[in-house]
Image (cartoon, rainbow over all chains, first blue to last red; front, side, top):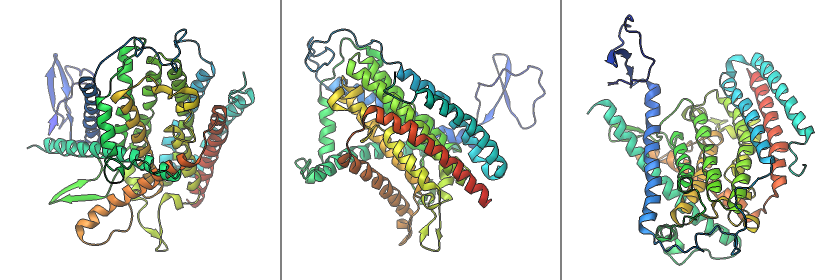
Length: 159
Length: 347
């Protein structure tokens, strides 16, 4: 079963068709067909099905409670909850810069972690070559880690 | 019917079964939690609705639906409504690459007990579960409430901090397995050493350290005791979902428990041999036993989760951050180096 997917780059009009590849014309361009029963696309299709079903369940639950639940709003009920005290000032105020720092450090180190994944998957082919290559990389990362530790970025109570 | 239609119908049925089973498992995890914590504290727990309170989750669900749906006037309405679903969708989406059992047969029709086997399954799970942070952060921000905002900030900072050690702890499993496909990782754990020690990853020498880092960061990642700072009742009322009521609150709740189940299922898959276990008896039993072993292992982890909740006090926030950044992360990095050395040494 072949389903054309029109997402590829617009093909050259006078391209030489590949053998065994089917094309269809759309917007004046020839677009190659991708075989849908290729393993890769086929293994991702269930994810799409699951995503659609889960989203349906999620929105259905919210819609259901909106339709079935009662609605008797009063101004006091719709006020932000602050333990019965009338709230002073808005909630969207400034908050400690620490949280930004954590987010930035996370992005820095998470990228390093993701670098390790492909390395780990083909590690059996690399062995000691891969070990020392990655050791160098990890040592560089560790240097940065020690630096931020000494700078006090990891101490929550330090200003 | 064409091949693709059969495939799509097959997948849809599987998805519906898995979503239903997940929601059921989540509902009964709440029952299990209330019951176990009650017994740990020498109380009875729910025991009025049904035998030993077994119908309690259904009663709770119905009550949630009929509750008043409050949207505070100060809230950013659109994001406020969207946030629970943003938390809920990844929680139920990530389960789709976990293998629940071996190949089963319905008549002559072979069915895999897994929605799909991605060749980057593990990466997919981490990518999707980390999207859950958005639900928490947006929900807390959109409520326009000081407690919610503080809870959301704390929760997001905690979740991203522990995600580092979570990601690092799994690298050692990849070093040993050499693949990201969860199905293949489970397959590699079949068989036994000396006829009685199962070949689970947890028994491969340096990997118990990565299991330790994995499970501790997973508990923090799912915001559970002793890392349940976002919901520290004594300081933050209910954290990021203070303003949420009715089924919107329930969605956050469902997402939390679904995440716990996913994390337990992933721990089972990566370290405890997935669905492997003794298979015996007639053919139909041999087909179903793997599913049983898988669920037994997952609920053993759930029991552990609840046990820690009944036992441990809560961390202080600076202790929590220090533990994640200064202890778990160096440990995880050291473990990666150690494991890679051992794997290279063995050739």
